[in-house]
Image (cartoon, rainbow, N blue to C red; front, side, top):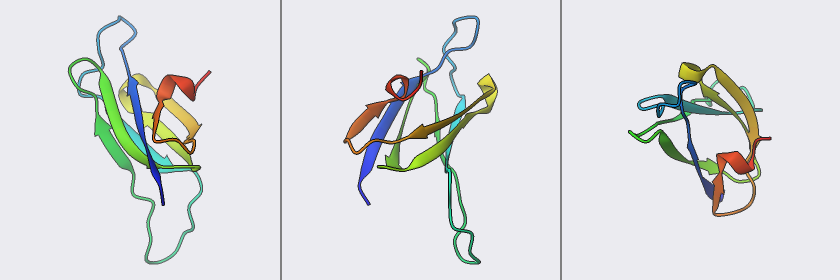
Length: 89
């Protein structure tokens, strides 16, 4: 399964970088079985509010940033790298 490096930057409403904010990605649809669980992939924003995570290409994920009250559905394209702002309106 090929992956893509998703990168992005978050700020709080007052313009400060979202330092330490947790970015959580879960597959949008996932087969529920007794052995496999939909464990989230997580990353933390650095001091500039930047984050990066490897996600499976051609897959839809639910991206949750609780510190900012964001809950987004994104589909990762079949490219080596992608920025979050290119996936959201």
